[in-house]
Length: 161
Image (cartoon, rainbow, N blue to C red; front, side, top):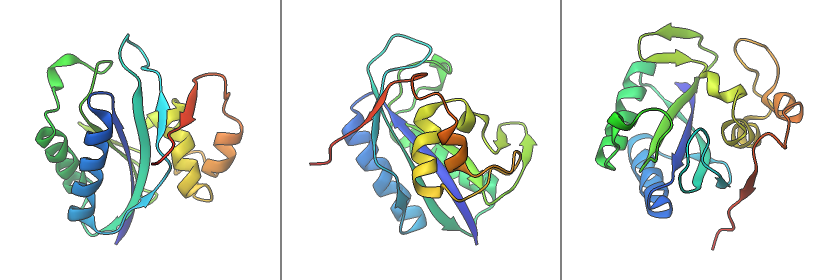
């Protein structure tokens, strides 16, 4: 079994889409380790604020199979892939880590580079996998987060109700 971490984001009907994505991931993979949900302003375009979180789970699937499952869940939530990288999203599921695998093939790169680029990925990942080491740099995610500029991107936890 591999330990996998996936980022979840949505800025269209975000509460319902995040809840539904969590249910779909639980159905596919069982119990999820979850970070808090964070709200962030859209990055790279003008749009509604996002809800973002990271989940971890164990799977016997290959990285390619996990990626295909994530794409299927996105599609079931009306994901529009024609809009480009920086656009509104019903649901965005990104495979961040698959154990400590380093992989670079068309359509799948591990670890995902956004881990060290965006607070909305790194902070929730560090929250649930802070002692895990980045497969390339060797630094623990908690250390990477501690060195991240917290003013680079405003984000705040969503109060659960």
